[in-house]
Image (cartoon, rainbow, N blue to C red; front, top):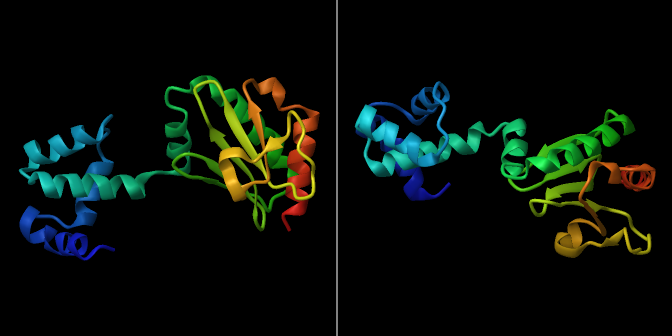
Length: 180
């Protein structure tokens, strides 16, 4: 952790009347649409200075993002893509109980012992599905990895849930099988 940030956290009880953990607990009881609303709340209701309020809200958000929150945030304004995401999850889960689904800020990693798939809402109308399929040739549908770089060997662009078909599920299963 940055030294200045650690100093700020250490000084928080004296300067604001509560520890970072106490502020986080308080913010968990509230619902704010925007970062600025939470900062304003701390400043007006608790007389916390802007610097401390901003730090408290930022650090609270980092830790309070559940897996569900991360996925929901990825699809804000892209809700039409959720049926594709759901179809992918439905297809992947039966492969085995050894799968870990790890949402991040902009994508969801699907991992066995190694990542074998990556789901990313690329635009408002398209999900990019990255796959790790070594030694499989690129086709029109099973394209090169594109923006995924070395994280994946291939990419499939999906615009509708019906595209999660037998062919795609077979590629997912093959990627899963190879990820041991």
